Image (cartoon, rainbow, N blue to C red; front, side, top):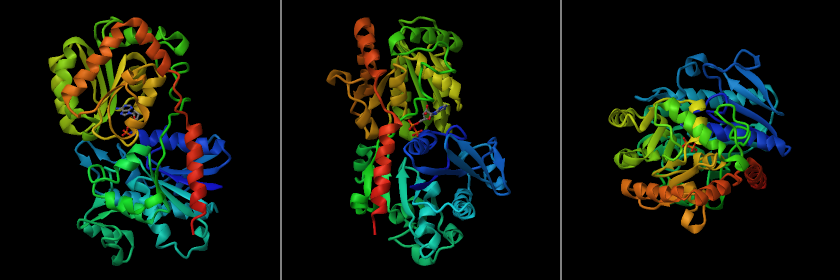
Length: 460
Ligand code: ADP
């Protein structure tokens, strides 16, 4: 089976969040299962392909190949989608260009895919094109399309005037197609035209069909019926494994969890916090967006910081940067803040902290809780989306602490509950041992994607 996997970010080449992790790992897990895969992404600033042609570059990744679409005006910029002040105003043009170029390159290299697998709004135009402009094109005769929604909150919504840039008849600017409250909605088009749609966890697949979580597209999603499913994400243990992690101070496995405390103390020192393995140390690595629970974190932080240490690594909305900076000033001795994107620090936080904070308001899947498990760091999560599928509360014999009400108080209570268990050294060690052995590898998840591709191929 031949698959063209298209994404706006792929680890390790470019990353702002979980989409890159998935796009870096899933295609290679598919290759391991005998699928022929070409990965497509834009050629952003800083990426150096092994081979360069006029309008695209290529690199080998394992037995697969990644193809970087080049347009320096559009992609040679400091960020992927925009700055903390807002999105780039020409994002539609940028990603529409990318999608068009993917189909051209597929023809140029004569790779006629069985499946075009798109991700989120940025690659939705490819699916729209496939079902409109390329409907009669024999090159895509047998090609079926899959759209994975990593986050329904980002839909690629643009002013009506931009519709003309998509080279589609105006009939498609209507309620049944791309029109959305008087604007163009690319993700909506992708959902409508895709042969199959999936979200990144079963619980989120249910949630998005309700008005509370559907972000205005719940009706469109309900209409997909059994063409909509949820497939839980996984993590790449070649990237996330404290036994082999080059970024951390001291490597460790579930058999030597004590070495985690060497990381903890060295990291406390680096952050200028008091070095003491008995001080409860909480970490967070996150995009700083409303989704991630920054509002309840900032409200609840003072209570937490009275007795515990906290480190937050994040990048996102300006207003959250400001709120957190204020807290940092006030609580210099117990709070450390990094407003940037930094792989090394991320690994050090997962390895050094006792617990990981993930109070997301909604969460399509979440990868950080799975990464935390591997590093024997206990996740504290809000009961929503993929966190429901992956974190069971300690009192129900699970490996995390879950709070149900979305309030700073409930978050603080969950932190205190975790601290009580932390104080019982034997219990805590048993918990760390257990979670570090959990398995969320791509092997199983890749098989589910292949099953979906096969179902897709049977569609009329
Ligand atoms: P989302 O995709 O919604 O951002 P996920 O939990 O699915 O959230 O994935 C987040 C990924 O991005 C994780 O690998 C996390 O470690 C990483 N990440 C988020 N923010 C940062 C940051 N500021 N620096 C380094 N890594 C980050």
